[in-house]
Length: 146
Length: 146
DNA sequence: ACAAATGATACAAATATGGTATCATTATAG
DNA sequence: CTATAATGATACCATATTTGTATCATTTGT
Image 1: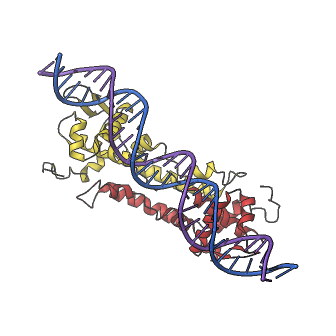
Image 2 (image 1 turned 30 degrees about the vertical axis):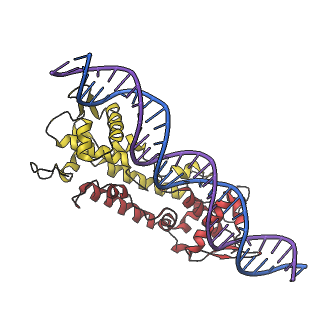
Image 3 (image 1 turned 120 degrees about the vertical axis):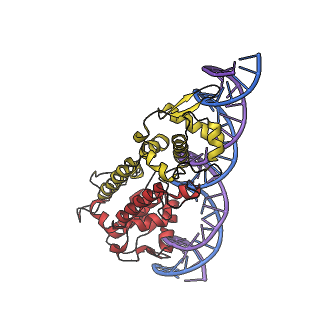
C-alpha cells in the first residue's frame, strides 16, 4: 500500500526542481535530463499540474513551466489528491458494505480517525519545506551531475 | 489508496462470523451463504488463515474452521499483513530513489512517522472488538436475513 | 463406498499503475 | 513567413495487483 505513487513522487521532484532553480521558467526537457524521469510521463504530469493551477505553462520557444502559486501554499496532500484522488482509507469497506445495516460500525470509526490524522499530517507538509533536503541544501554548490 | 483490501475485509467478516456463532466449527459453505462472499475466494482466504495459524481447519463431513488463537489476540494489523504484506507507506520513495544521495530526507522522515502512527493504531484494534457492531450487537436477536 | 468437507494449485478477468506515441497548437527567432 | 522549440490533447499500451474461478486431490464421518 503506497501513500505516494510514482506520479505524485515525480510531481514533487519536478516542483522542487522548479523552485530550486534560479530561472523562473523551466522546460520539461531540462527536467527530464536533470531528474531522469521518462519524458512523456513527466510531460503528462506537468500538464496536469498546469491544469490544476499549481504550475503555469508558456508555450513556444523558451517556454516551459513556472510555479503559479506561492510555494508555501503547496502542500503534499494537494499533490496526492491531484494524482491519486481524495485520500480515503476506508473506501473498500463502504463499497463492499461490510456493515450494510449500520452506520455506527466501530471499525469504520477507527479507520476514519486514522484517516483524519494522516490527512492532517500530510496537510502540514509544505513542498517548499522539502527543498532543504532535496538537493538544494547547500545553496550555491553545484548539483548538476546528480 | 486502500488501507484494507477485499481479502482482508472478507477475512475480518469471516472471523467475526466464526467468533459470533454459537457452534465452534463453521463450514465455508455456511459462511458463503451468510456473508455473501464468492465461494472459491472465501475458501482461499480461509486456507490462508488456516496456514497462518489464525484458524484451525477440520476436514471431512462436519468439518470446517474454528478460531485457533484467543480472539483477543487477533489484531487488525495481523490480518492486513497476512493479506497485504507488511504495511509500508513509503516503499515507492525508496524504490525510485527520490533522495538518492541523502538518507536524511525530511519527507521520508515525516512519512515514516505517519506510518508508525498508523501501524500503532491498527495494532490496537482487536478483531474481537469489532464484534459489538458487526451483527452481534443485540445478542440473541435474529440476524440471519442479512 | 459415498458424500461432505478442506488442500493445493493453476488459471483468468478487471482494475490500477506506469509509461509511450502522435499530432495539434502556440510562440519566438531569423 | 517559415522553421523550430516548446506545450496541449489524447489515445494507446505494458505490467502489476486485485479479485476472483476452476479443477482435482485428500481427508473423514456415516
